[in-house]
Length: 200
Image (cartoon, rainbow, N blue to C red):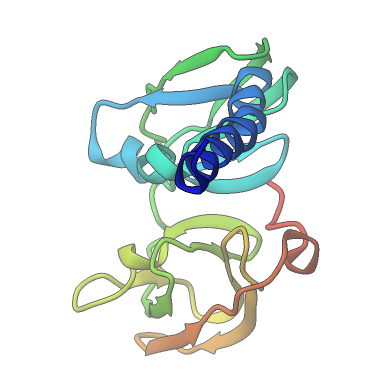
């Protein structure tokens, strides 16, 4: 057997051996997919067992949502909509489909919400929390006419994304004031990032 043939066979065996664990892992984990009907559902935030994992539209392809089998709480949240909550029991290798149907919340923004906060941050898919409540994603609050309206006073702002260190700050807003926050999240491990604000 020639040296070239030997090397080719070794390479082929190596590729099969290294491919097996990934394939086995996919057979062990369950995948969660989302069916949406409108833009509000596509940009809604997703929590699994209280941990923020991203927003609906991005949880596919390379970023598809793979979860260990067992019982899990899947929560989907969008400002001014009622929360979607599902208790799911996931089997190994299962593709679990969540058919989203977010209903409008009858509450309206307070009339004294006259201060405007705009956010410019990277990555733009990072989640924005104001006073521990999910407010949306960075790209919803960046650019002209995209600011969020808040009541005057002090507010805690947190920008977070799995795999990045969260950014936190406190702002003091005056009536009719326009304020912009600019930041870039730094890469970090899940352990360093910590919990990304409970959905409760």
